[in-house]
Image (tube, rainbow, N blue to C red):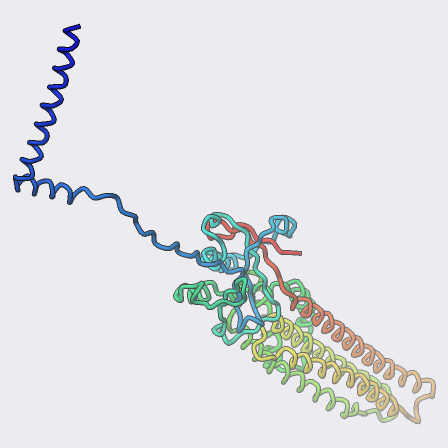
Length: 426
C-alpha cells in the first residue's frame, strides 16, 4: 500500500509543476511586446465567417404569345405564334413551298425563336403563321410594323426586342413578300385556266385590228403568262401592279376603240351595186354582219384579257383600292357588250329591209332577207353567249377572291431556325 501512496503524491506534484509553468508562460507573453504583436497579426488574418449578401434574382423576360406584322394590331397582315398542339400539325395537309418563299420563311423563323420560344425548346418547335388574304400595306411594305402581343395585350416593342433585331426581323424576313406570294399562289389554277381560254382567241384576232393594237393585246397576254410563271416559282415582281395598270389603260383604250368601230360599222349600209337584182346586196349585208361578229369577238377577247389582268391584280395586295373600281369598270364593259347585241340585231333588220327588187320573185326576196336576219340572229346569240360567259367568269373570280380573303394558316416545323416541313391547316 505504501507504493500506491507514493504514486499518488508523484502525480499531484507533476500536475502542480505544469500549472506553475503555464502561469509563467502567460506572464512572459504579456511582458513581451514582440510576441503580442505577432499574435495580433495572426488574429487579423483569421476572421470569423461573415454572411454574403445575395443579389436579387433577375426576372425572366416574358415570352410573347404572338408577333403581329401590319399597319396596326387591328389589321394584321401576318401573325406568328407557337403551335402548341402537335395533333393540329399532324392532321394538316403537307405542301411544298417554292425555294424563294422557303428562304424568306427561314429568315423569318431564325429571328423568331428567342422571342416566342424558350431557349430549351429552340432545337425543334412548331410555329403557326396566319396570313390574311386582305393585305393592307404601304408602298413596298415599308409601312409594316412588328408588334409583340403578350398575355396582357400589345407590349412595348423595346421590352421584347432589341431595336436593331426588330428592324432586321421586318426587313430580312421580307414578310410582305412571303404573305403576298402565298396569297397570290392560291389563284394559280384560276389564272392558268383563264390564260388557256384566252390562248385560242389570241390566234384568231381579226384582221381589223391594226398592228399596234394587236400587239398591245398580245403583249398584255404575254406579260400575264410571265407573271404566272413568277408566282408559280414563288416570286412576286414588285413592278407587277404598275405593269398591270399600264396594261389596263391600253386594253381600256382598245375596248373603247372597238366599241366605237362597231357602232360605225352598224351605221354603214351595205353597198348596193345591183342594177336588177339583190344577190350582191345580200352578200354584202351578210359580210357586214360577219364584220360585226369579228368586232364582237375582238371585244370579247379584249374583255377576257382585262378580266384576267384584274384577277391577277386582285390576287395581289390592294395598293390603292383599285380592285373594286376595276371590277365595276369590267361590269360596265359587260353591259356595253350586251347593248351591242341589240344594236347588231337592229342592223340586221335594217339591212334585210333594203332587200327589195322588182326583178326578184317574192320567194327569192324572202329567202335573202331571212339569210341576213339569220346572220343577225347568230350575231345576237354570239354576243349574248359572250356576255353570259364574261359574267360567269367574273362572278367565279369574285367568289374565289372572297374566299381567299379568309386567313391562310401555315404550320411550320422548324429545326435550328430552318423550316423543315410546311403544312396548310384545314
